[in-house]
Image (cartoon, rainbow, N blue to C red):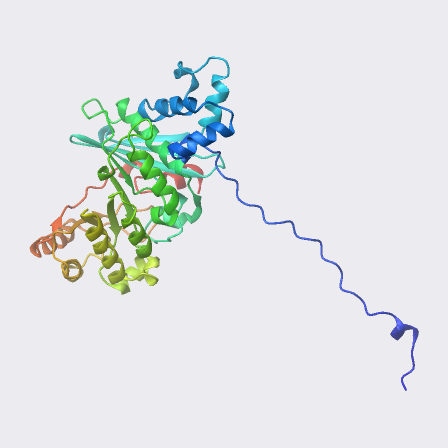
Length: 386
């Protein structure tokens, strides 16, 4: 029989209690803005705020039809409480940090800071007879494409629908003010979701923003969905979902390689949705919408610009004929300090020739804004160290 000692008679020691962990804090959201909401939702919001529905409609008319967001311009609102009303419905979302012009003033890149110090970029580009705005859908990007400045930053967060729409309002105002030069149109003709981020990874906000951009004033800017382009690096299921939205947006697929070996390296999401799955999703989008798909192909020296890869790309895209697709080879806009650089001019020409010989429609895109950190994400990285 074991003797009971004073030591053994003590109750077993309980583990020290750990302090309770505070609940995980949700990231702060942008303030609610009129452009986040559909017209019906705006009416309901007016009721929540104790306003007549006509007030939200008046503010929407100023915002979408007149591109105004300041209370001082909204003289049809009651002077008493006008500032408070407009501040409630149109809280400031974007603050300009830097603006750079290039290409003789026809390219204007703007860096904005958001409410939480995240940043985004837009690029306003004038071409003969039209002005195009490139907008961002995310602060940063989670796709990690190694040749892309934004991909190197990582993803900070998704943008709200209103943060996307506000980029368009500000870009349209800049175009109307003649910021791209005196001899170009003053009206925005096209909006392309080709800035920072992967649009289809922020699906709900991007689709909601696209509807607002396309809706007739005072519900939106009245820019036809046929003049809106959504770019993706290949989220195949989301492409299928987009085809069913009834918007008939233009779709651009950033393919960058015709084979999985090269594309796995250049576009990491390819390990989930391979080249063939991505191209098939694009083909089905064309079938559903009747909208010809653009294939974006960054030409990177000695990486994906070989002639045999051009022929492989032509074979891949021609499986469903050639009328459904347009190819945009793009000389890479190099990121400082990167091993990646643009293809030689002769290599670019041979790449285009092989595609054209296969019967494909091809446009070698010009590279804009190299002297102003033109590639998406470069200005943010340089100005604020993101």
